[in-house]
Length: 80
Image (cartoon, rainbow, N blue to C red; front, side):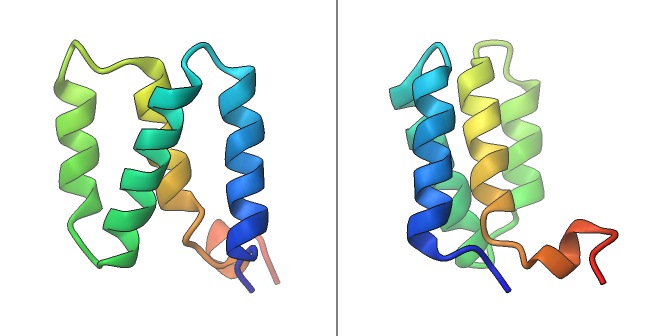
């Protein structure tokens, strides 16, 4: 079962506030979540972000957390 959208968002906000650039993190989180939910090629998006030397750590972290927030715990590996 997935985290409820509000719980997932609350976790993201807590991580954003603890980071260096909360706004950038949350923007990337929303983008990653949106791309995953739409069934877009999130791997291509991730590779583009990663290959850009101007991409901040907050943007990378937010995007990958947004992608991960759409997964079921059974997909996390080790869940039974």
